[in-house]
Length: 500
Image 1 (cartoon, helix red, strand yellow):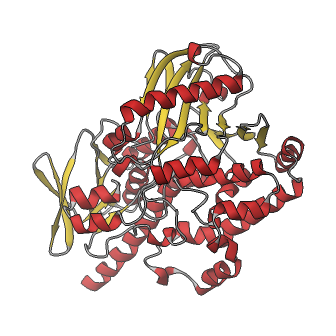
Image 2 (image 1 turned 90 degrees about the vertical axis):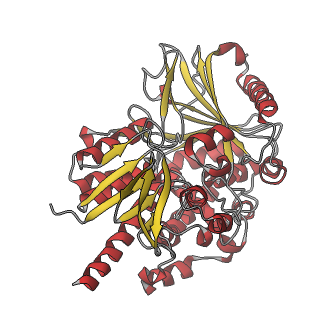
């Protein structure tokens, strides 16, 4: 196959891997430079004292984006990757003692909401129906196209989106939207939680985020065999199979730019030239450190940063039949929790706790009869808070809360522990301020203000990953790769035509 040219990708996160595969399939010679010794970025893994832990994202939705890559590469996905659908999306535990199992089966879920909370089943069905329509008629437009190149949109698509954009989706907060939809405060809290899927505040983020539950509750949640790390491993293997060259422990110091064109990168004092550069690093980091452009970096910061996370990885020496793969223990006052996170940039004393336990789906991730707990609370972005005092306090609060809810001494069951906090997240993944999703969606215009997938100033420079359009989380990172490679294809064709 004749090569179209040389492409360099900075960072082997999920979006970087997906971009590498797409470019290689099109005939580019692709090299990936990664500062860490492993691929996957936040989607990584470690083992400690016989317990295996997925270190980063723990929710798997929209497996079709991974299937698309294998179809594109003409490789049999089952040789690389297998997954199963979960019959429960999440188990919810409320501060007042109420509990809800969010079944994948709609009628079962709606009935559960009515029995456990007194929320009419009809409200649940109607909400999920609206969520599906919002995603299919409006959301897809956002996640499948570059917003900077609006000429790509067909008038029909735009007209459909406008027709389905109600005032409450655009002008109300997600919380206000949910208060209109449900009669019980627990149902409102359950559906407000979806704002955290991109590090946002449900009391500020728009009602448009009500499309997120569609992916989890209508389309479904899945479990990749071998844990989330198997997504990283499958894409890394596929990229290598397609001829992509990986350079680990290779820090890119700078992107070489000359006369408004990206020409290569500097790694370990060496200039490595290429025809195009794709940065899978945080966009702020890219401008500040790789392009040394303070002005552009500052502009990125005009938007509020998303929240971060504090994660404890606990090896638990017994098993809890009342817990599932995904579990949420809600705070008593959600509004106050988000005020702490985004205004005072601190932890709320009674945080919402998320626990992911992969041993519920697959043995071998922990010693027999034991469980691997990934325990996470939302954290404010890092602005130099006294984390060394705050983290032990937060740990105690989490333990007290879980011990009360589960009626046992959780601390006595912890056999091994590791911690990941906003500072470490920033150090390991160059996510500025430890923000998991770059910018938050705490404004009506947030979707339009996210950084584009190509540079308006520098020819041949592109951006993928959670800090740029269309946003954070595995499915959107995969989409950023598809959008970007589409742009490259179009721009390469134009250039090619101009030269002939």
